[in-house]
Length: 510
Image (tube, rainbow, N blue to C red):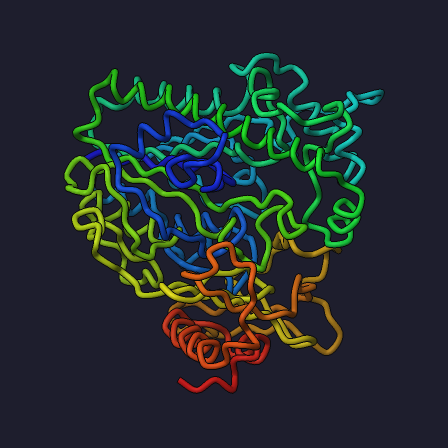
């Protein structure tokens, strides 16, 4: 059986009628795909953001307790290599430019073929020119690096209609790969669209598709708000308007509809080549993207469901779970074991965190885990089960270390000042067998990160699905039960010992 994994970056459940029937955002091709698939209602993130999520997919390992955004490790299994053992051809088609950065090395090199569409976001694709730029580029530069904004403009200034935009190029290239290779034996094809990631820059007709009733000129609105640097986010939110936030959402919806169209052309290729009865198709995202609710943007801790509970739909021609839904708890990391088992292989013995969802495809009432943990390195940690969600934030002024077999400059998206890794007074770098699941010595390197929140949260999943009422202080018994569950799960998954003190979990008995 062939396997196709489609990953659309930063896609919110809220924008899809499959999950939110009241949304005005149109995604007819995804609706059609959902009607023939098993729809996962409790699919969640694991490690955030982009590349930590991809390490989960590529290596089956959560990393948010151990390290930030970085390359694959020497000890990591590689998903394409594991699938190749079962006789599969493997390929990736993507415009996700982070794969080609130094701090994200090793993810694509193991595919038999890799096709990269250049130029998204801050990819060093075309040389920015001096001189004036359009007003919308200047507007983005108010709260972000002018150099980065000019880089994006240089990359896209030659793009006219939607056929020149990234979703069209990515899904068209993926369809061409099927034309060229689908008849040559079983294959695993990973297709990644960096859109609907910001900047929320879309051509017509999508740019004006959802703007009815929004006042003002589009050039007056920022389509790439800041969120990595805390002070910049606060400054943006202090001066933004309801119209600007509405416009931002309209462009996000427009980009979602554009992606849906080109996903549909790719699905049409499966029709044309008569592949459906011999091909599993997994559709998902790495995380959602908050659009100003709670005065935040992006996918930062605390990880509310608005960006942590993400879409996933799977078509499996062997399954009885078509046109139905499941409430089973699953996570991004589970894609690793799922793809390997779907190819007929066995996940390697070192697989630590990934669980195949194939039993759920055979019986939508099956469960592979009772609860989940998720988070971002250096921030807090989250735990959810059927009844409760708890966010445990860090304690102030506790030590934090990265662990890796290599010393590298990681990308820390919650760090307002680069260069905080290593070389700290009285905090030497150490090297030892720190992780019992890793057969190599690892570098223990001190790092400083500014937590986004020191507040702790407890939410009732049944009574408060929008997570507006923090019950941390009022529901002590339930809070303590969830803290015990959190520590139990972390004990199973593994962590550096100092993380218990940093998260204030050292006194929790299990």
